[in-house]
Amino acid sequence: MLRTILVVDDDLELLDLLAKFLRTSGFSVFTANSSQTVSEIISRRRIDLILLDVMLEDESGIDICLKLREDNLVPVIFISALSSNSDRIRGYDAGADDYIVKPFNLELLLVRIKAVISRSQRGTSISHRRRSGTFRFSSWEFKVESSRLSTQNGFEISLSRKEIALLFAFLSNPLIPITREEIFSYLYPDGKKGIDLASKDSRAIDVLVGRLRSKIEQDPKNPKLIVTEHGIGYVLSTSVEKIDVY
Amino acid sequence: MLRTILVVDDDLELLDLLAKFLRTSGFSVFTANSSQTVSEIISRRRIDLILLDVMLEDESGIDICLKLREDNLVPVIFISALSSNSDRIRGYDAGADDYIVKPFNLELLLVRIKAVISRSQRGTSISHRRRSGTFRFSSWEFKVESSRLSTQNGFEISLSRKEIALLFAFLSNPLIPITREEIFSYLYPDGKKGIDLASKDSRAIDVLVGRLRSKIEQDPKNPKLIVTEHGIGYVLSTSVEKIDVY
DNA sequence: ACTAATTGTAACAAAGTGAAACAAAGATGT
DNA sequence: ACATCTTTGTTTCACTTTGTTACAATTAGT
Image (cartoon, rainbow over all chains, first blue to last red; front, side):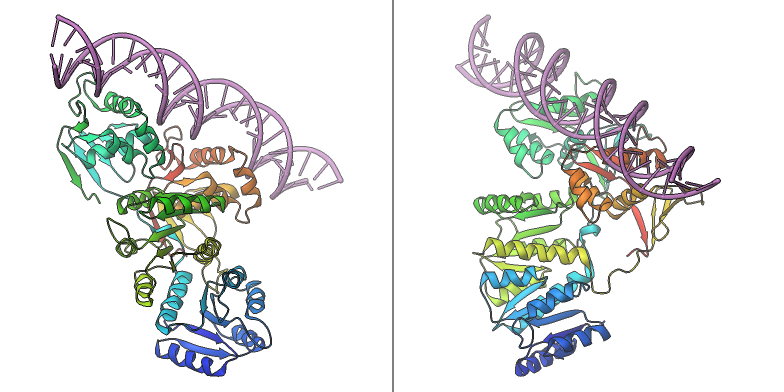
């Protein structure tokens, strides 16, 4: 799809240069050198991005952008000789998507234009994927997606969130002893509380292991699945079949 | 609405500084110093923007971003000491939304973060298109346009306005835990009442979740669709088929 | 055999969540 | 305009989850 860019600058030489460059880069380009022309063009044409000079003769680019934002979401990139941090902040506060200081590298301008257009067409993080797949071990089957543990004939047991994370830690490391610190990192992936607990000789993991054992072991007092490695940690002492896990 | 930012840097001092600054600027912040932690966090939490250092010890930020872009649209801003135009272009080509060179002004960083998040939430200039399409999940079918929920054999149930918004929140984020704050922002898009309720430990969401459960769960006392994530929020624990949704 | 360290477990406390009852606000019908 | 019904949020109590503490049991080293 051919994207349209409106370039707004009262420096006619730069206007022409930018228009030519953007056309050869695959865009359809409109040009304007006054605020009135801007209004006319965007009322008539579909515009995918406006490249807007801050310093125009008849009206500042900032004011144009503020007015535009009253009823239009079209992406705006400011180009400007004004390079101070406060000028840039003013541009962003006016509603710009990006602010590029003259003189600029044309290729870099191009990738920034593409990034803003791409973002404006894409939306948010909604589509990111959750882990999926199935682990089978002993008489159990754990579905990662729904975090459900059931016997292989369908009888389901209820696990708490922390129990689920612990089980996942074991299933991800079958037959390998894992330390309490390593388990903490599975339970608290963003690290803070886990580090805090790990550093103060917390017994929380041991209690949690006991709780998981009481749910999945045939005889929790003589555990066969989650076995203690004295002085090290715990090991899932049975082989695990992973089906479509990633 | 409280936005979440994931800050990724192996310089723990800068990581801490950025996290503190962003928290006082109104964001919820997660931190990571390795690519594995990044993967863990984004698979479990909804992230509105990732601030990603290019030079990490275990894997370059560029590679992380490339991998991320295989199935994720979350906005990414690179922060880097590498300032050449070709480094920047490489960052944008990897899928970044912005590229900020160290050392940087924190206020300017903030407005650039806000610009990227804002754009990612807003879409394009032709917005305000009426939402339409259909979600299918479990034995249910939800038509967005008419806000009707029915079983796939045609039996329709009546949902209130708030119940519809809650269901839409879940359907828009399948398999991903969403916090109560995030749910509030779906229920109160113009923000005011939602922010008020969120800040005073309101139990309104929990009650509403209970009401929706009583309508769509086979056994509301043992919910299989809307599952509680203890200490976090709720997750729609079944996959969703989207048909012509935009 | 003794000692120290580690682990298991029960009881308790704190935080988080479910559900029912009630109140207030909003919508609908006459 | 008023009455009635529906929706929505608050409150309270009960239940669940999670971590701490204290004591008992087990393990490993001397």
